[in-house]
Length: 454
Image (tube, rainbow, N blue to C red; front, side):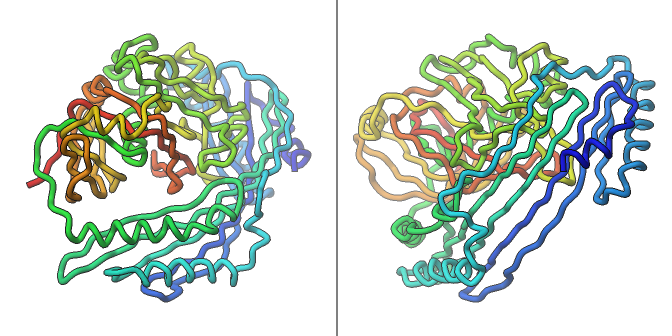
């Protein structure tokens, strides 16, 4: 395929170009109310061509090899038009030339598992969850995605990389009278089908929480000292801070760029935030991004100081910062944009019991249920939580919404746990596209967080 891409692009008249070709196969099983709603697989493929000429930069996607000549013509013409209407030319940061062939490293290849066996494991979890007390409905979706990506650019890089994702997710609904509560579970990763096997105890625990939520009291609104578990602490890190670490967002918002300068003190001294897409078993793993740049671990915040940012080649060139390998496309239909890989708060040195003792009186909040950001302010829903009295867990609470300001919250981090959990649900939406990514971290104690409620 690399040779075909060379032949296809051999006559491009441009300062720079790159081309991607990708095949993508998705197999899925969807089950609701004990019935299989859909199952099967689909296959797609296509090309994305990017051209830089005279400082203008254009992207064109196409699906058939015979469309290449027209796509090249259109991309070059579009780049020339954009160049004529730009005051500042687009200039990519320099990147090493790479020649690589990366095969997926799997413990158990989901492509070798038959569709009937995948249906059987979905039905197994459904039956297991329905057998638990007070469970009224279970919606389960299983899927595995195989992507075979080829990349070629005019600088000499030639890369072939396989990516495989396996995931099983469920919404578990409990009911008592007219009251219902929903808890979500997700198992998955990038190193094989074994990620969804043998997780029965965790599934039963999610059902137990769903049932217990029926007796939980709505939280009382107020400002509290609060421990966030790895699930919701990870969502805060990803949504409230992580997107502001994406250089294209910072570039396009001058006020944010002023606040997010490298070297700025933003959080407490104990706070370290990292994006590391090199973690091979996680949903956000990859070796090379969709600009052919090797991804690297990025220390975004070190001891409360902003020390890094996520870049594609063009944002790095514009801002004069190092490339990081974070230009990612959802698939062959899209050009890449700056995206997170696996983002998390680095674990600290304290046990969960020490965090509870330091909290004394407050709230312990668990797992995210959606949310939104508006500039530096955020609102996140939490699945459930507990009142804490004298360092001991008391009654369960529900209907929790955490509201706050990014900068105030970063400076409210008081203690960080020594545990570490990465979420297995994965995924991130930005610019109408969704990619595989991951978040998580340890338990984190905050001095002051505000919740809405009764």
